[in-house]
Image 1 (cartoon, rainbow, N blue to C red):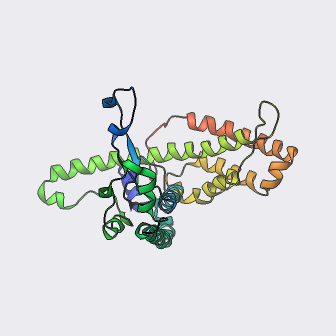
Image 2: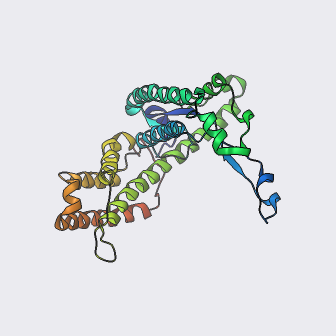
Image 3: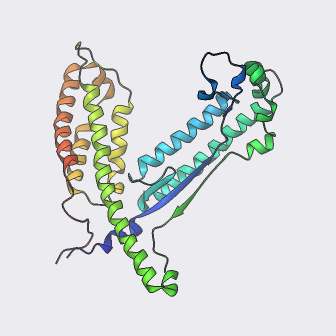
Amino acid sequence: MVIVEQSVAAVEQMTVILNLVHRMPGTRVKADISTVETKADKELLRLTKDVLGAESYKAIRAHKGDTAAQMRAWSLPSMLRNGMYLMPLTLVEKATQYLEKRQVEYLALVQTFMAEYRDESEDGIIPRARRRLADQFDESNYPDSTELENMFGISWRLLTFSTPTKLRSISRQLYEAEKQKAVEAGKELLESVRVLLRAEMKKLVDHMVDMLTPRTDGKRRGFHDTLTENLAEFLETFEHRNIVKDDDLTKLAGKAADLLKGVDVELLREDDDVRKSVHDDFEKLKGQLDKLVAERPKRAISFTDEE
């Protein structure tokens, strides 16, 4: 018998939710459309302006994006909202150490931005905005520097799945109902991990095949080192992220790892024979992944034996 309650236990025992919060002020505000000449009905138009327009702000935003991308690479694919990452316990320490390092970098970038914001010379953010925005400049769009600095921040916390036991003292019926909801949520979550992890690998392999396929004119396609690096990183963390013990995908991940061994990116760019050989190998793997992704789940996922 499949004991489906184990699906919840599996989630609780092998994962935590890492809740990452980046705080940043917005840069776009409503502009005065009455100063714009147009034949269009202005009630149908919306005009905004970028009140900062600073490269130092863009650097903070890029840093935020890179941090989130790394969290996605280490976490399990899931339907959790943005900023929530289902993290295997085996990668939690690595992830938090990384975030501690990124936090220091983030705050340093904020200080660079704030120095530019406080700069009253013509190179400062506000004097530059006054020149560039002209009659659209509004002093009220620029808060006190201390207030603005407090709008930035990066923090995280670890959350776990569980049914609050205190509910049992209030209502046994309510507790059992919530427990059953947790069971169903655990089953759905694990199945989504299986489906999405397969889709993630398929996307990487599809991209590999596409980029190694010649253009219609026979010329090679150009590609970045990330073509192989992204797949290599997926394979490196696959064992940690495969909490559903997807044997079929494990076999294909092993094949992909074997195919990547010894692949020289520069040789892949320049040598047509090497490129064709690697392309053909990954095209076969792609076909196997296509079939795997097309499969529908045949039964509930279980982490116990059937009897």
